Amino acid sequence: MATWSAPGKVFLFGEHAVVYGKPGIAVAIRPRVFVTVRKSRNAHHAKSPYIDSCFEVMGVKGSVYISSQIPSSSGLGSSAAVTVATLSAINDEFGLKYTLDDIARTAFEIEKKVQKGRASPTDTSVSTFGGLIFISGTQRRRLPVQNFHMVIGNSLVSHSTARMVEQVAEMKRKHPEVCNPILDAIEGVTLNALHHMGDPPQLGKLMNINHALLEALGVGHSVLSRLVLASRSAGAYGAKITGAGGGGSMVALCPKHMKNRVAGAIEACEARAVITGVDTEGARKEKDV
Ligand code: MEV
Image (cartoon, rainbow, N blue to C red):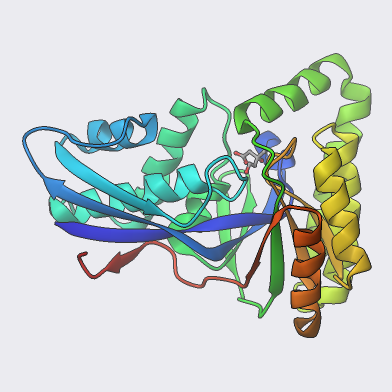
């Protein structure tokens, strides 16, 4: 029996644009998924195309137990965390000698297959390696970890990443003259942020710009807008949609002494707030439960 966990993630900059090879910055956060795998002749596990694919790709059979602190369909990378933790636990239980790079690559291939070709390697890289990650095309770079104080607001409005990605693809197809400059501007914001990672007030301003650009792409939602505005009024440096939008979550970057106030403002909008910071660890072996 082997138990592994993997963290969730938030995009600080660049979601949707990364699908078109543009850069993005994402960070591993504390809610985690825990997966226990045990060798067995018959597969016993919850029906999930992600888990089925993990066993298929690794060519083994076993049973799985999952315990997740990350709500699904919340934009916090739960499917990538489940895939990374499951692959890691299978690798350990069956002594398959996959490296972390192999796990990240295989997890990305599985996400891409299940999401019908539309996925960036961001979620799976962040979940595998932890910390702060800059993604550009197929390149991945770990950035120095910052002591960010973040509050995540889960709108409790469920959404589908695949559908939101398709919606942006359709806008790009129908109105390239409108959509392409928005994606270019998101790229500009992300590259600018890269030079201000140690300056949270400036990062907050850039997050606000990125939020406006995501709304221009059509992936906003009235509840997310309310949470973003409430967080800014409560003292956040900046706040934006995180992930695919259309529901799911937003993230606020805060001064340390404001995080409880920001969380309170989010909860007052009848959403769920989680105060968090950067999780420097990616996939991690846990004591067997
Ligand atoms: C979803 O968390 C982020 C998107 O950019 C899709 C992806 O990167 O795979 C919308």
